[in-house]
Image (cartoon, rainbow, N blue to C red):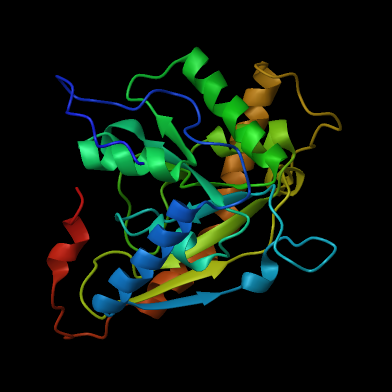
Length: 276
């Protein structure tokens, strides 16, 4: 029998660092039920979700979707963003998400849901080298198990529509240490949100970290740098910059294709800030 949500602790609660749940590619019952619930919510809000590029997803020898890759969503604008890959990518292999530890621990109900569904790697508000090492180790465990590691790699200040913020080198570290390909998930129509909103998620072709690092024209080392070295830090930044550069045009197209026509009446724009 599921445990009841515990009362809020004093102060600002946070989830502990480290993977919550198992590093498994198989979705549990709670995962599948909440996926279904999200489709019902999207239907009730009349969201017109269009997904393209699923043929780019990595597949096994049997032609079925395979795991062991990094799903990188951008641009990250509103609460709806993680629900798009969760709801519209194949249920198996399952997704494991990076998530803000304070947002997910804000209420007893949220903490209960996170523990029931699993597949969450909380990001603490006060990190450090030890926390960073924990994140990378957990991400590697997820990828080796055959699940899909999903994150939204932007950081920094807001930018105009049709563009993505700076890409954190964290995605570069994960790709370097795991060797996993990065699959872009380009989102359009996620800001603002309103009833009958047209939303697009476009799956790009898998990208190897070597190809991304080479986009600046500089030589790419033959061997993967030593973990924690200055060379690894520089290479991770190059991977992140390359990912930003090669997705910029797709981000702009997704934005332009989902913009409402001039003068359109937007009903229910409060949905944009529903979970802030």
